[in-house]
Length: 112
Length: 113
Image 1 (cartoon, helix red, strand yellow):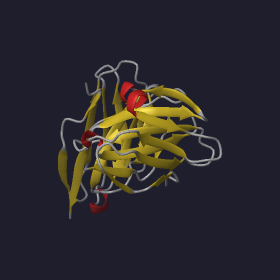
Image 2 (cartoon, rainbow over the protein chains, first blue to last red; image 1 turned 90 degrees about the vertical axis):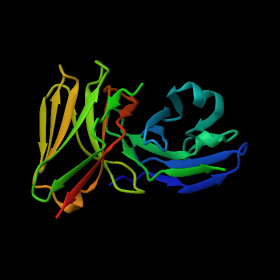
Image 3 (tube, one colour; image 1 turned 90 degrees about the horizontal axis):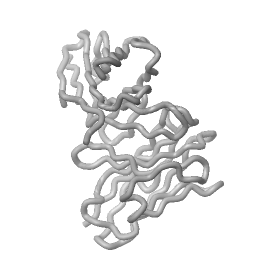
Image 4 (cartoon, rainbow over the protein chains, first blue to last red; image 1 turned 45 degrees about the vertical axis):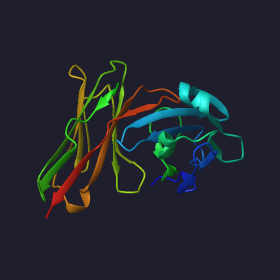
């Protein structure tokens, strides 16, 4: 069973507001991923980290999101100015490195 | 476009039967393939995965078949049980530190008693 912790489970924001969610990876997992699952059940990769360094991110994340994985603190993903289209389930996953990813329960964001 | 596709969004199987879930992918570079199980309001949980150096892997009632030339992999669940009812997601990616996974949209399996 996954031990990835995500908070909050649910988040409601108005358009233009910041929306911040957090993730604590499994102990010993240096790689952290963020995915967005939309209402059509499509998974979109957003960004990943190895320790504190960004490995990859998509254009949208670079422009509209702020993400970090500081040492000894939870990883975070923050939308700077929420839009209706950002309403989705945000899943954090962690990995020892090479392949298997373990997912947290997700943060369900609703932007009104 | 969608790099990993599950063409059948739902499947119903009688208890005791074999459930077969299929997945097609586009990227020739993918060499890691996985099936996740997702209950409502729960995160995806890894069921079984396989690397491209094998074409079959068994784990209890689960078997993954990989057809690299056809860019296709499948999950077979034998002796299906009502508790197998869930959404099953296939995923594929490249092995290597930090490589992201591409997911299918999922297929809802219902096992009826």
